[in-house]
Image (cartoon, rainbow over all chains, first blue to last red; front, side, top):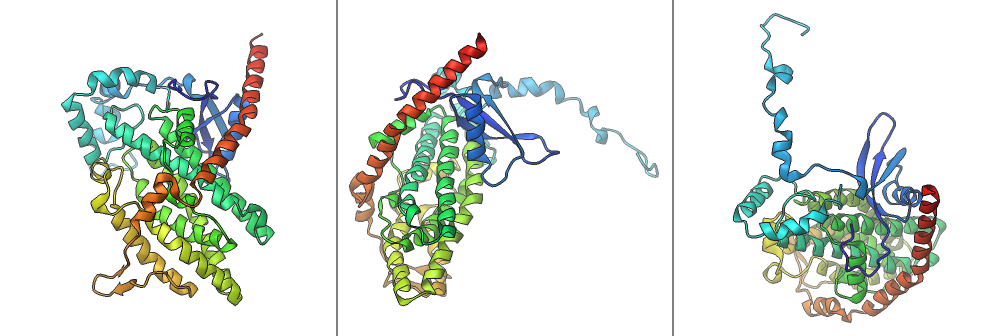
Length: 101
Length: 328
């Protein structure tokens, strides 16, 4: 994470913060915080990202633990879905007069 | 997802740097108003510009806590104290959102803090002016945060996703800052003659430095053209400054205090206020480190950093010990 050449070799690890704004909604990425451990990451996430009641639940996860797809490969990676237009309801023609379909 | 993918970026960047095709594709994405995300390919200069701008922005928020923090223990009522405390805490939060956004570009928190403390990185010139009276807290919220909002709203549409998202969050909170400042000015301007004089004095001292916050005039702004092409910037310094003057002068009139500019007049044809010449020498002097409080601000930041070292080390040691216990 840190790129060397920092003045502090002991830089706390980075955590990504996800917040559920209210029950019924998914957690959503809010930002990140540095913390020495996971409890501190939760506390910092609360102080930094929910000062105005923005959340009812917080997830934190070490940034280094996240596995992400590579944007450079995005077109090939997502290509299999591109030509399957029959997966969308608009692919099918329904004659006029047919209702509730 | 923000920073961890950056490790590979350094290896790839050199190989791809000269690829004109990539550059053209990048500009095409920008022109199409697509957002650039942390792991996307970007020109080195785009990355460097953003790191410089976002980290300076973050430093400004962090140093910006000092002039207002100066009045925390002397706020005139418990209500004002609670409000000011919340505002200063917001500034810390804004600094942290922005440091996080800058870190997605491959710099580290430690590096940015080191650059601030060594004087290599700049922060907004405005925070090198002293807060002499309580009215200054009103003037800062009203004028300084007002100018910041003018600058920051277009940044919500900046081409770099993490910066734009941080700015959306910041702008939502900034509006409270400006209103609480205006409210302080309103109370003072409706108060005793002495209080009104205090409000006027604060406006006298903060007006010109606030106009300087937008940076040099367009003719002298060295980074502007490229930043506009990259859609990091949406409006020129002079355009934003004009907008600020246009909305702020009527507010001063409402308060019944006078903007300290003999050349200020409304041009009915253009619909804009014309204002006097800014003292750019003062601006460059403050930027070069010779403002009223530059040294004091950095010394205080350095002291806070040093005094906190044992806390950071202890937390680290605690985490390590617990990690070992959990593993055992």
